[in-house]
Every structure is written in structure tokens, then in C-alpha cells.
Length: 254
Image (cartoon, rainbow, N blue to C red; front, top):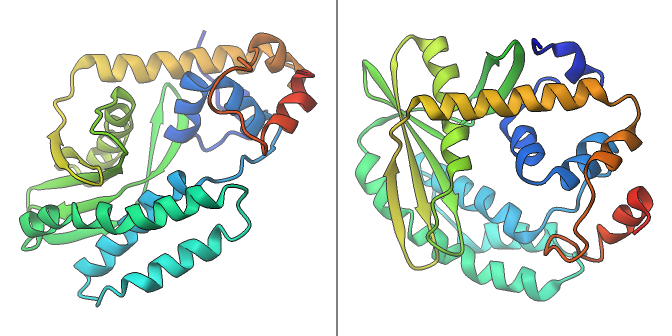
């Protein structure tokens, strides 16, 4: 069965992105809530911390004077009505620690020309249109160096991070006709690690398999409720909180 953009357009999923693909693969219940029913989950402090650290690092690379309190005040304002203020306070303390662990990355690449930050890229996988936005890309002349910043509570490498970069590598090579090198720069509050990704055929196979599986499910479902019948929620899972339990009950009744 060939994949068709029509199956994805039917559920307003075009252009596709890695975040949609990853959600479908690893958290199908969240995918159904967010993408099929359109009930957008409330962003958590953990989800937004990486964006703040990235912005601080980019501003520093542009020669700006980093006024830490300015970034922290904006973060606190963004979550002023968040249900768990203790969690907000925790991440307000962690952001400076994450940022400090980014210094070695700047020291290593400070002399390289920053090609782009948050560059829009597009490609096609199994006939399906994809879009994405890269982190930091440095110009090495005949090749590009992509660094994806990951802020994590623990030093943990995940295959999903590599799959995302495989998609970006594919799109960038098609766009610029240059060799593209992809690395993860993982920071915790106390450590940092640079991971150069060595891609194999399995990265492409896994991405394509998920796209094919998603295409099959989308083609089978005629109504939103069909997705809910196919994927049942684990009510003991850690994802549930006071903001999304009402959504779960609205869809599944439990």
C-alpha cells in the first residue's frame, strides 16, 4: 500500500513533522488527544525550558549581552497560571545550570560561521510531505555541521533524537547538495556530552516504517472515535495530570 498525502490531509496532518510522527509512534493516546481531537495539551515548564536555553545560547552567539533575569522573568510570566507553581520554580533554578553547560559548545564552535538557527527545511518521505526547523547549523565550507541541543534531567541518549536528525540531514542534503554532519549536544544541570551521530540504513528503515504504519491507520479511520477504539489509554501512566484527565474522560469515558 503506497502512502498518500490524502490520508494525512484528511486529518489535517500536513505538512508532517517529526514531532507528529514521534507522538504517533511513542504516545498514540497523546497523539489522538492533540492531533485528532485538537485538544492541545498544556505546555509544561520542562517542555519550554529547552527553548529558553536555546534562545539564550543563540543570542550569546550573536554577541548580545545575556541578562539572565530577563529570560527568567519571561519564563515565569509564561507559566504564571500553571497549576504546579513548584514545578515552575524548579525550572527557574535549572535554566541557568543548563545554560552554563552550553559554554563548551560555544567555545568549540565560536569561530565557525553560524549558517542558520531555526531554519525551515522540507523533504518527502514515502510520498508524504515533511517540514521541520533545525537548531544550530554551522558552515564548514564544503559541509554543514548541525547541532541539536537537548536539555535533559539525566544524561540519556534516545533513538528518537537520532531519527529526527536523520530527517533533517536528508532535507539539508537535498537543499544544499553538501555533506551534512549531525550531532546531539546533550546538557543536564551538571554535565554535558556531545554525540556525533553515525547513521545507518536502520534509521531510514525505522522512519519509513512509522510513516507507513501511520498511513495505514489514517486510511482505516473514518471518524475520530475510530482512533480511540484502536488505542486505549493506560490510566496509570505518568502523563496524566489535572489538565488532561478531563480530556481523556471526554474521549474514552475513563
